[in-house]
Length: 222
Ligand SMILES: *Cc1c(COP(=O)(O)O)cnc(C)c1O
Image 1 (tube, rainbow, N blue to C red):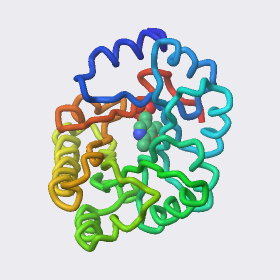
Image 2 (cartoon, protein in one colour; image 1 turned 180 degrees about the vertical axis):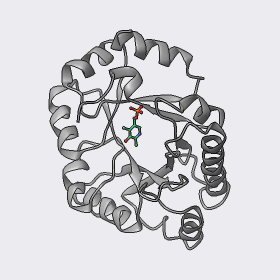
Image 3 (cartoon, protein in one colour; image 1 turned 30 degrees about the vertical axis):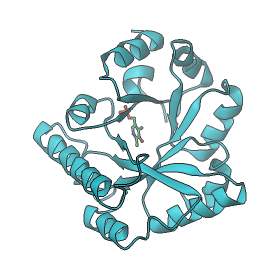
Image 4 (tube, protein in one colour; image 1 turned 60 degrees about the vertical axis):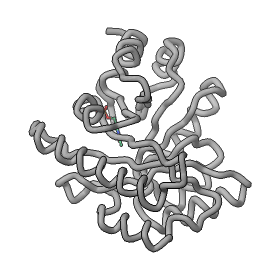
């Protein structure tokens, strides 16, 4: 199927309220434009430099989502362009985004990444760590970041029960915060989870945003 057909097919299958982020990392602008011409506006990138280059080459109504591991020394370059950072995995990074956003007088939307996978090399806050930070009020004190939800990645496995369990855990953490320290913040409403191989499971477990690359654009050549 062509890129345009895949975008239309997935978009038409998603339940209402679930957004599609087309993960375009490592793919050239010509491919992104095929998705754009099929109506796609949310694009996900995992490297700051690549995102910044694509911003200049794509129409201005694209929403750029940053989904990769973010180093504090790259935040300044990212902040002017980004619509939503999915992958905030430390308090230090959140503070850095707040500072850089303040410098250019912006408020940047972010998701906090929760670690639910079995793989130790995956990033993110442990759920109890996140709940402690929230309860201590540490997440509330930054005026130039707006925490609009959580992001999670499941273990890369064929074991559906395991994937489902991890998405359920992420959903539970999301509800805990939503009903706890974010109960008066209607903007805390996004749960980003689900990739090409597991997005159906993620939606069944409460995802509001899926990040799909390979199914749309094909295999990446690194
Ligand atoms: C690359 C990536 C995706 C997309 O993965 P596919 O399997 O190609 O759909 C989604 N989320 C994150 C965080 C990624 O790094």
